[in-house]
Length: 365
Ligand code: DGT
Ligand code: CA
Image (tube, rainbow, N blue to C red; front, side):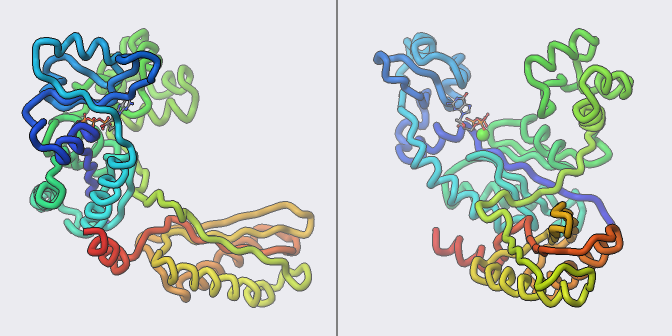
C-alpha cells in the first residue's frame, strides 16, 4: 500500500476574520475580538485578533486593557465574541471541506484534517493543486482564508500548517519530514506544553532533533511509558492516528439477551443478525457508513468481553456488517470456553455517506 496524504486546514485569525466578512469596512484596521468579563468596562481578555493587530503586539489571552494600550495611537476595532455566529460559519465551511476529503475529522471550531490518500492516489505531486482548490473554494464561497499543511500523517500536517501563516500552504513530503522537523523547537509538537518544555530543556532537549537523538529508554524513564514513546515517535514524525469523524453519532449499538446461555454460533447469530438489521436500518436513516464493527458479550459468569475490527474503507452494507459480526463471535468463542448470555453489536467510526453529504452542502449553500 502507498502511504497516506493528509491535510490540516486551519482558518486564519478565525473569529476576527469572520467579523471582517460581516463588515468588510474593518478589514484594513486592527480588529480585536474580546471576551468581556463584565466586571468593569475593559475587564476581560483578547480571544483573537487580525494580523494587523498582531503586528502591533496584540495576542490571544492578553488583557483587553493591555491590547487597548498597544493600539492607542491607531484606529482599532474592538468587538465582543459572537460564538453563535462563528459556529454557524464553522458548520458551513466544515461541510464544504468534508466534500474534498476521503476521510474527515474536525478539530475545534476552525480546524480539520482531510485525508486525501485516495483522491491523490497517495502521491504528493498532485496534492498542491488539490490544496489550492480547497483554498480557492473557501475564499470564493465564504471569503475566508486558511492555512494548509500537508504531510504523511496528522502530526506532520499540523506542524506544516503552522510553518506559513496566514493564507499559507506548506507541504512536507515523507522524505523531507525529519529535515523539516529537526530544527524546530520541541513545543511545536502537540503535547509539549510549558511544563514539559521546561523538563526537556533541563535534559538539554531544545529542538525536535535533540528529542529524536535522545535515548528512547531514558525518555520513558522520565516521562513514563506512554508519553515517552509518544515523544520519541513524534520527534521522528511518526504518527499512525487515523483521520476519523468525531460526530455526534459516534456509534450505534444494540444488545439483547439470548433465549438461553449458549456456545452455539448459529444460535448466537440468529439473535445478532436481527441486531445487525436494526443497526443497518438506523444507518440508512441517518445516512452514515461505518469504519469499525464491534461485538460484546456478557458471559455466563457475567463478565463482559468485546472484540472489534476496523476496515480500510467505510461501508454501510448489511452483508459486510453481518460477516464481520460472525467472524468476531467465532473469534470470541474460540478464545473463551464460557457460554454467552447476552450479545451486542456496535458500529463506530461513523461518517456521512458522500451522497447525503452533497445533499447537506447544497442545502446549506
Ligand atoms: P491563527 O490560526 O493563528 O491565524 O489564529 P486563530 O485566531 O484562528 O487561532 P486558533 O486557530 O488558535 O484559534 C481559533 C479561534 O479560537 C480563535 O479565532 C479564537 C479562539 N481562541 C484561540 N485562542 C484563544 C484564547 O486564548 N482565548 C479565547 N477566549 N479564545 C481563543
Ligand atoms: Ca486558526
